[in-house]
Length: 391
Ligand code: NDP
Ligand code: MG
Image 1 (cartoon, rainbow, N blue to C red):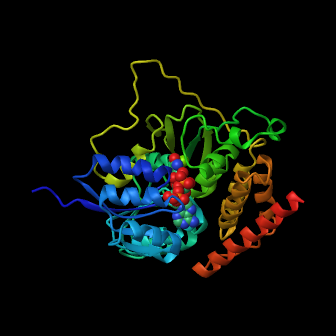
Image 2: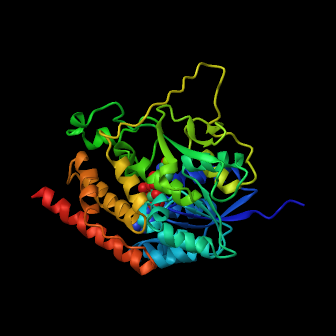
Image 3: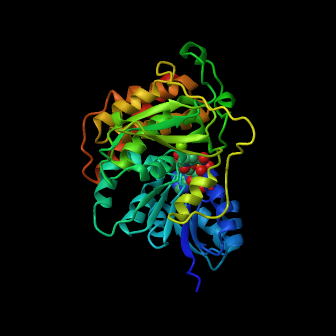
């Protein structure tokens, strides 16, 4: 007898990760059933997804979007805002969090609290809320996290080479690979006049605008160091960054005996998405398999920490712990939005984040209210600095 399909809530269904997840689901209709979705501004796309997959549980951001959905789908069960997202994340077998930024927090917390598998693309929620997420994960019956971020999915798979399940004493370090983004090889003084178009032109990955900008500043890699530390419970100084422009080696684990384990595939997010949905089953469809019958050169180099100071800022926030990563990520979200709105220059993004962090005073992040308060303060300070830059 074949098994019942597992249910999937796809939150952030209209975005880059969301639509690539739909590609995977189209191929896995026998094993996976989409039963909840959410979106933001792209309401028409959300309605089209609901129709294609016959989904009735739908999350939207505001009352106007709820009305637009109900006009088209009168029998839909529509929920609104952050509370709605939390509800949608509570009841499916697998919750894929593809929401953008800190707004993904209710999804992460609710899925874990309700014992669901959290297939996690939304790194910002984990980074900001790491102490709170740790607490939820330590409760018996809590859900598991399977990372969707390609580097972390690679590390997750490579850690199968460890004899341990926590602490990983046989792991010397995690090596997070970075493409280097569109400005690899440029010096700090060559980067003062780069345009939005230049920054949005990623060499190896097609992604949403925010993460594409984060890749150009290397803030994405800094966030990924914090993400790796939070996910695997390994201090940031045991996480290194290696620039690998081909984006074929998705990350590595170096063990104490000198062995390095890696996961390789062509850059295609549908592979880590399918892995996170299927684990421990591997679906029989190869996204991004490598053609070794033609020449393939893989190169590695250290990152340029002077031209890309975001990396060291992230390490410093990780060492400080508490709410420092939440401040870094919140200030960065505000600065990237301002850059995308052409209010500040590219080189101002990381300068704003660095400046905001100088105001941070240690906070151990004891509660969700404390996190929300820290997030709001960091955002307000970032906006203050942006206003000052514009005048
Ligand atoms: P997109 O901007 O393409 O999509 C984001 C999704 O979240 C959309 O469905 C969007 O709705 C929705 N959304 C945006 N803001 C809000 C909000 N305030 N409340 C509720 N929903 C909201 O982003 P990506 O798909 O690129 O990235 C999603 C997450 O995955 C990010 O955390 C990113 O760091 C991570 N990630 C992405 C990768 C990629 O290849 N794209 C790779 C690894 C990680 P709408 O579009 O309808 O407005
Ligand atoms: Mg990544």
